[in-house]
Length: 187
Image (cartoon, rainbow, N blue to C red):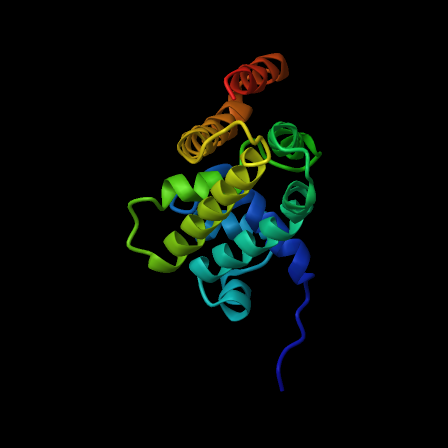
């Protein structure tokens, strides 16, 4: 007969997500996970297979937590102002109590850029491609822009979003606001 879990899986995954978000995949040890999650290695392996399985579950959890920002962005129809709102929303999610600074997906994208883990690389590349397509869609709402300019601006915005994720870890709110405002003076 299978043992009943003596912990709330959603709660322990949330704790693991925050630890991975703060430290990255490689720097997070099983001992750190045990301590943070309040469960032993056996329970981690039993529920998630291994550290990678727990990490994938943590990414899934993060996507659920921030999906509302992407849905609002995707469903909006105000062009460039929607992109700017998305940038502010992306920073504001980090200010929610209990959340870490920066973007867990951007951190993962950067950490796994040269990794041999094709599955995570595909997930991260898909996320970035989808974000770029949303930028393109919003930029196309300005009929004065040609396709070449739209692509260049979408690339610029994607890189600016990466920079924003890094800046939100260490810079003040005023500096971040100035950064976002300067980005959109150039779009």
